[in-house]
Length: 292
Image 1 (tube, helix red, strand yellow):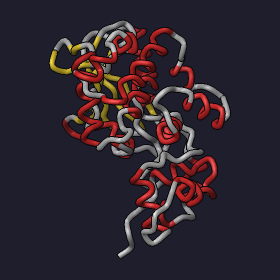
Image 2 (cartoon, rainbow, N blue to C red; image 1 turned 180 degrees about the vertical axis):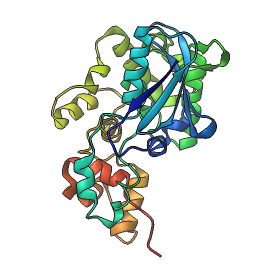
Image 3 (cartoon, helix red, strand yellow; image 1 turned 45 degrees about the vertical axis):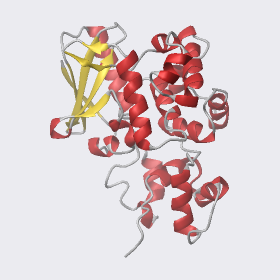
Image 4 (cartoon, rainbow, N blue to C red; image 1 turned 90 degrees about the vertical axis):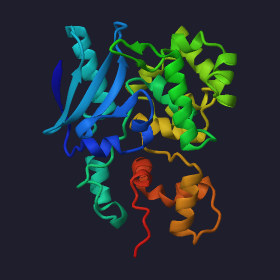
């Protein structure tokens, strides 16, 4: 089944895919001709490959096998979320036009951040970026998916992202020893159990009208979600009031404004304070290259 979904302009498929490293994490993979594929567990329980590529004014989606009406609706809804097709970034672009370091953002249609179909998956992956190298994150996510995700029938070596129920049943020992999540294992397990039991409805946060400060507070209540992880998840949710400050952010801000002297999170936040509710995007797409 193929379907074309329109996006609010400006839109660039490649800009979304390249917005951060999520496209490198299983069950995503890049395909031929710049397409993005995702091994996808539908609500019906069927596992299929979702293929997405750029189309005029939006994206084209394709799912293998026979897809009924309910599944078609789910694919369209999830793909729109993953690529932020309905996001209106015009206020950000209006501000960016006056900043040389962001002057190309609108022309490049930068601003949308690739998301997973569920906030649960985004949250787990964010937890697996904490205090590790990017190579470590890739390894941990790949292990989690291959060990606990449902296999793709046509290619059993590929798997969907595991459900909260499956991870909740895994046990901390398996997540530590077999998946090698280390100190992150208890946090991932607790998150999975809360989501599986219904005690934590992460997916409702996609459409909540809570003020950002209150939403951030709720995220910070989740074990394993500190200020960096909360800011990253807020970015995924389309809230840009906070900056996900990590070692790279500290280094970049130090080089840009402090001549390489040590800085802390307060200096990073202060550097983008004038951007208000858009400061996360201003930081994310800032041109950090040193002028020649």
